[in-house]
Structures are given as structure tokens and as C-alpha cells.
Amino acid sequence: MRALVTGGAGFIGSHLCEALVARGDTVSVLDDLSTGRFENIEHIPGIECVIDSTMNQEIVRDMVRAVDVVYHLGATVGVQLVVNDPIHTIVNNIWGTEIVLEETCRYRRKLLITSTSEVYGKGSREVFQEDDDRVIGPTNRHRWCYAASKAIDEFLAFAYWREKRHPVVIARLFNTVGPRQTGRYGMVIPTFVTQALRNEPLTVFGDGKQSRCFTYVGDVVPALIQLMDRSEVNGNVYNIGSTMRVTIEDLARRIIERTGSSSTIKYIPYEEVYGEGYEDMRHREPCLKRIQAAIGYEPKTSLDEIIDSVIADIRPRLHRQAIENRPAYP
Image 1: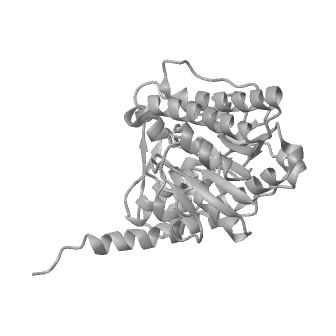
Image 2: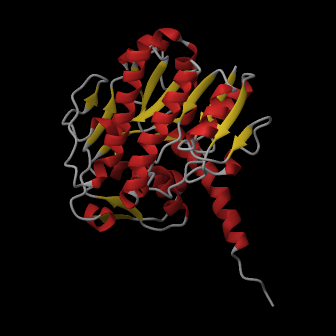
Image 3: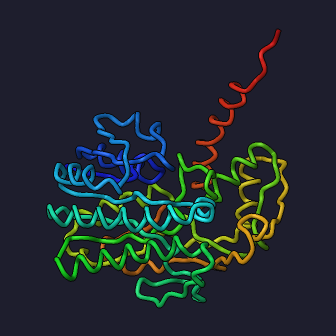
């Protein structure tokens, strides 16, 4: 297969590119490097990378025409980036996805769109099913613009499926973690691991009682590929995640233990980080029955194994940085 991966230089996208190349696919990448890094993919043989945006319709059209399938991972991600740059978040996520939908529909290329558990908003459920009602905060709190923009992406995808029978499938990802992920835009595990390896306080926002389920990128990527390979999943949305729930303060303690760190935990009110009125979901766990029935999906990597993989990725990078920043002796 010839595959195009938008956002292919990002954390998940680069792992997807590796897996596709490993099975013999020819892979092209479209990434503006706003959150991705070219070093994530420069080791992968045979990849063609175009540094541009999904909002450049001519580029998207040319690249879509040359492939068989398209994985659309290109989007603004990360709580900190979303809060700091809501205009770009909304425009990039909606306009970029609409262009990808239009061009893949033009050439009848199957499209997989990665969405997010954020679309469930601040619903009161602890376990979320794909067809659950959604509760989204008010429009004057831009914390919710990411959730709303990705929900619009899903509405557009379903509209293309219903009106034009465009082969599209949606994957709602729940807190995917692994090597190459950075804490630059608010990703919690790489942030905690970096702080712990530096013996700095681990900064837990709020009371730390909020819980999440973390999924290893190596479990997520094969599921994306299987969804692309099966036509019977077209026109549907699937949760992809883990059901291993952990509170954020327990996560911090576990990372301190596994790094052998002398760090303590520092609790910081949300408003000090994201501004007044920030709202967060207390719990977020996916119902996996639909994805299990569709492709037999079952996450296999434990939380400790996920943490250890991130430690193994970040520790040498911090060591290299320390050497590079070491003062020269006279």
C-alpha cells in the first residue's frame, strides 16, 4: 500500500510510519513541524516528507492523489498549546480536516481520522461509550475549543460518509503515551518523568484525584492499521485506549518510585496554570466493547511498562543535554 500520514513527524504519527514501513508499505508524510519533529522520522528508510500544512489544499491534493490510503493525525494537540493558541487550534483542526476529507473523497482514498476522548467533554460518566451524549462547557471558556473542533471533524466525517459514501473511519484516542512524546504542551507522563529524573517537584494540577487511563503507543498503532485495512468499519467511530485507571497523584508517586527519584509532589491550582475558570474531567475511561468486536483489540502493555519506556527514552536525552550544557574548563 501507498500511505499518506498527516502529522507523521509527531509522536503517534512517527510510530505509525515505522509500523507501515516495517510491513512493506510506501509512506509519505505531511507535517508542518509545529508540534512534530523531523528527527522522529529521519531514521525510517524510504519515507518522503513534505513540510507544509493540511491547510494547503494544493499540496494535500497532490499527495492524496499519489497514495492509496490516508491516515489523518495532523492536528493541534496538548492542553497548554490549546489554551495558549485557541484561534490556531480551531482553524487548523477544522479547516485542515475539511480539506483532507474533500481531497480523499475526490480520489476515493480511504481515510482514517484520529479524534480524541476530549469530545466527551465534561460528562458525568466514568466510562464513555461512542454513542454517549456529550456535555461541553460554555463557548467563552476556550479550554473547550479543542473538544469542539474535533467534534466538528467527526460531524464532517460522518457527513461525507452519509452523503458521498466516502470510506472514512474515526479513532477516538485516550491518553496515548510512549517514546518520543514530550511534555512541551502539557503531556503528563513525559512531564512527570522529566521532573523526576531531575529530582524536581512533580507538579500535579488540582487535587490530583482526577483519574485517567494511559495507553501504550505500541498498542494503539496496530489498531489504527487494522481499522484502515477493514472495509466493514467504514462510517463508524471507535474508542482506542486502556481501562487501567490511575489517579494523577498516584501516577506521580509511581513515577517517583520507578525513577528512584528524590522528588516530592507539588499541587498547583488549575487557575495558576491555565487561567481562571479552567474545567477538567474528573474521570476518563473508554468502553472498548465496540473496538474489541470489530478487530479483537486488547491493550497489552501495563502502566509500569509504559512508564519504563518513557524513562528509557527521556533519561539519555537529559544526559546528552547535561553534557552539551556543561561549562568548558579553562
